[in-house]
Image (cartoon, rainbow, N blue to C red):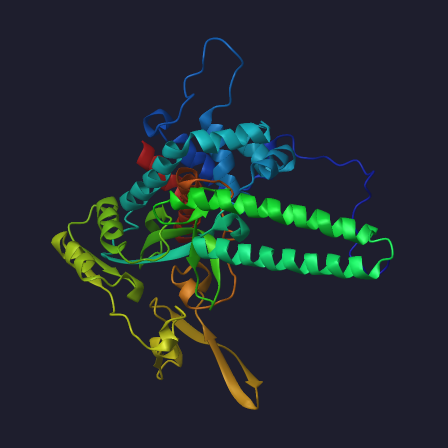
Length: 440
C-alpha cells in the first residue's frame, strides 16, 4: 500500500492517556455544558430527585440526565435509545457523565417527567444571556415554523378525509364484486382461489368502513372537527408548498436581531400565525426586562387588535399588511423583498442579512448570478425564503407526543441552539468564565 496514508497496526501496543479528561480539549463544548448545569440550582428549577432517598435503589442525579439531553440535542441525538448507546461508546459523554450509562427508558422517563423543569432551564439560560449583555438590542423578530408530529397524515382525520376514504372503499368493494361476478360466469365450477381472496378483501374493507364510522362519531365531539389518533394534540396544517401540508405543531419563536438568540418560544397547534403577535411580543419583553421593545413580523401576523395590544404594552410592532396577489399565497418571499445594493454588489434580505455573490452559472442560455447570506441556516425566516430542507438540529419533527411533552422537547432544542450561539459569540473559554461569574 505504497503512496497511501497508512494506519497503525491494530495489535500494536499504545500508551493511551491515563484519564478521560486528557481526551477532552479545553475548547470542547462539553465543558460548557458541564459548567452550565453545575451552576444551576436544580431543585429551585423544579427537578425531582436532587436529594437522594434514604432507602431503595440509588437513582441518577438529575444533573447527569440533563447533561446527557443537552449534549444530545446539541449534537443532533434526541433519541433516548441512541443516547444510551452513545453513553457507552462516546468519550465526550463518558467524560460528561463520569462513565455512567443510564438505559434508554431511564433517559426517556427523565424527559417525560421533567418537562416544566427543563422549560425553566431554557428560561434560565435566556436570563444568563441577558446578564451577559447579549440581549441589549431593543429589536426583535418573530415567526412561526411548522414541525412534524409523531402522527402520520393517514392517522389524522377530518370529515372530508373520512368522506373521501369511504368513497374509495365503496368503489373498491364494487370493483371486487364485479370481478367475482365475472369469475362466476367464466368458471365452470363457480368457485376458485381468486374468488376466495376477493371475498376476503371485501370483508376487510367493510371492517374499515365500520372503523371509519366510529372515528366519525369521535370526530363530531372535537371542537375543531379534527382528530389525530397517535398524538391527540397534533393538527393538520398547511405549508408553503401548494397542496401540501403536515400533521404537527406551529412553533412560535422570538429572536433578537443582533445575535439571533431565541428569547421566547411557544409550541402551539394552531395552523396559522394570526393572533400570536401580542402574546409572543409581551413574553419576549418580560424575558428581556425591557421597558420598551420593537418587534418585526411578516404579513401572517397582521391584525389590528394584535398591533393595538402591542402598543398598549409599549411595544412597537412593524407588520406589513397582507397582499392579495397570487404570488404571495405560497408564503414565500419574492424578488421584491430583496433589495439590491449596487455599491457593494450585495442584496439585503428580509432578515436584514447581506447576501453576497457566491458563483455565476448559466441556465437556459442566461447568465445566472447566485447570492445568499451566511446566516441562512439559522435564520428564523428561512422557511419563507427557501424551500430547501436545511435544519441545524436535523429533521424538523418531534419524537414525543402531546402538547406539553412536545413543548419540553422544543425547550431542549432552543437551549441547545442558544448554547451554540453563545459559544460562537464568546468562545468556549469565555462562555465558561461568564457562567462561573454568573453563578458566584
